[in-house]
Amino acid sequence: MAKLPENFLWGGAVAAHQLEGAWQTDGKGMSVADVMTAGANNVPREITDGVIPGKNYPNHEAIDFYHHYREDVKMFAELGLKAFRTSIAWTRIFPNGDDDQPNEAGLKFYDDLFDECLKYGIEPVITLAHFEMPYHLVQKYNGFSDRRVIDLFVRFAETCFKRYKDKVKYWMTFNEINNQSMFNNDFLMATNSGLIFKGNENREAAMYQAAHYELVASAKAVQLGHEINPDFQIGCMINFTPLYPLNAAPNNIMLAEKMMQRRYWFSDVHVNGVYPDNIEAYVTRKGYRQDITEEDRAVLKAGTVDYVGFSYYNSHTVALPEGKSIDDDLVPEDLIAQNPYVKVSDWDWPIDPVGLRYSLNWLNDRYHLPLFIVENGLGAYDKVEEDGSIHDPYRVEYLRAHIEEMEKAVELDGVNLMGYTPWGFIDLVSAGTGQMSKRYGFIYVDKDDDGNGTLKRSKKDSFDWYREVIKSNGENL
Ligand code: BGP
Image 1 (cartoon, rainbow, N blue to C red):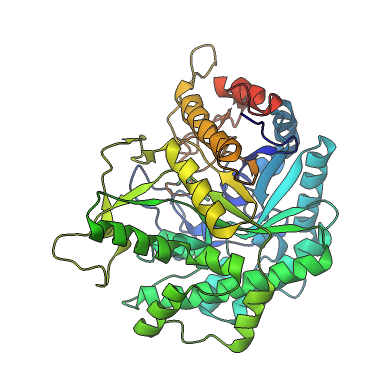
Image 2: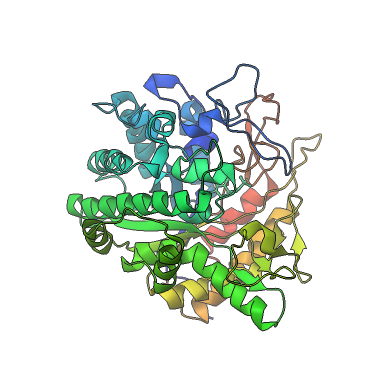
């Protein structure tokens, strides 16, 4: 088999609010992630009305990367990372989102962080908004349900592009922008587009309008970024969870196709600059997304992305419930069926390495753009032995199987892939559960779900394994 390209971006991925902590340090404002309590296994996190003393807000300290980044980046270099994907906390730069001036201390933090990475030859890969809209914008505008938030985001993007134009080449606008297709999920709506529902609003309608503004904001940022530095590579970022039909019943095949359309039109717009016909037909039929102008359409067309970044954790399987038709109002969550052919993780996430090869093929055939796997991994419980060692063969097994499928996609299927940055390669706060105990890392961080621990970093067995994978450019798995 042919090898991966020499410049393949082997790396690791994190997000500001899940590891930085220091939630009020050096002028940082409060983000929506700062008002999220910790949940538990399959108990959703609560979004509270401001910070309530005594509730556990795990992001407030997280792993305190803000104060540990120098020693951490040194370890990342030892691991051999070529790329480090993180996000810029919007509230470090514009604490309220609509401030007159950016916060210099926040800008300086990322200057120092990027310098530290570049010192070791580690390429920063930066997401502008990873689940952390300024809380002030959530309260004042209900996030992206208000058109005015477009310009506030664009100003934030412009400030970052200008400041870091000689340090950062790879950017993404919004993390997993398409999570909001699960519009019944409060957490996903708040983190994706800053929408909080107070009553019985039509959630799906609100989602289509807010997502439109968000896509316009993204396209404006992409266009501006290319003007600021024509060498920038600016991508979109979607959660990619292929939806399989439970069986060959034609209605289930059609359902899976419909659900794929409802989940992946976001990247269609990012890449093609136009809404796909099926979504135009759907929103027209439902009377959704009433505010879309000719100017918006021109902006979408002018601000298409350079690559498609995506996360892949699992596949889902769908079946049409008894007595339902494809064209009924379907609630995405009600369609999920158990796939008898795959095992699941401790958090009931299906484990499906072949699904990654399927996803790479699907995205490559659909978009004909470079792809970037910017998240992949297994959340698991780790045990620290008496002597401090941590044996995590399950993590290696998961990643090895996925990398094998990734390599087949590149080497046998001709997929154009830029890089691979496994998620949470240093333990951090889980986004979905708010727990520390759902760990993804090669680097262990001593902290538990109640916030106790020394924050000491140590290497798990997987650390040496991944270092060898990078060193051999994916040959030694
Ligand atoms: C993605 C997010 C990440 C991350 C990951 C794992 O959806 O982009 O922020 O946390 O999923 O999810 P979890 O932390 O819920 O296990």
